[in-house]
Length: 240
Image 1: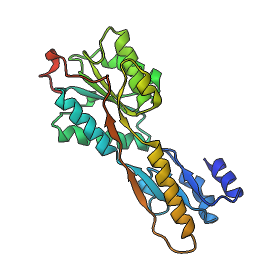
Image 2: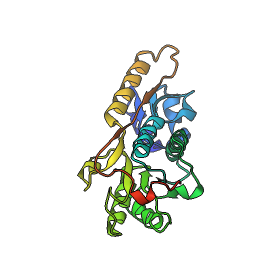
Image 3: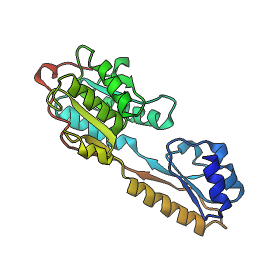
């Protein structure tokens, strides 16, 4: 990141949008020294120094949880990612808040850590499938792990979504190519880019005046496809 920022500053750009989920503040110091406007993605800890495009994870997970509980699911596992990532912590917190809102009890076993990749999702799902009672639904922190989970479930002879419902996050093009197509929480890259550009334009136009840093929110939404269905009868009464 530091190298990229340095190169952009040396090219005398009018602004920089850092659209990564993890940033290193010292890497941004050169842009600050040269008064180059910077917009970050989902970095509320740095909002006093830089403008932000914030992702409202709570809405997406709330819609996902409402969808699953309406289908009779109560034993729901969250396939999370590395705990040192701020973006994962925010997604996990949003899941927990949504679970409490819809009366889903969460225990330690309801969180299984993957590596945010397909293979990590597959390995994590193999562990989940050994549990009794087996969960009736999985919400993954991203689409890649959801795809891995779907593959592992199919390899174990389970029918998706009849035996197990799976929801991803991001709505990558891959999600609509799976069989069944993946129900997922859509995060609009187009909206993020538009918000970042609008903030950069505003900062650039006001760079000679004191301008408060803006924080614009992007709201993910649930896209229902074929990987979710009503909970299987034997699992309806089992609580998580």
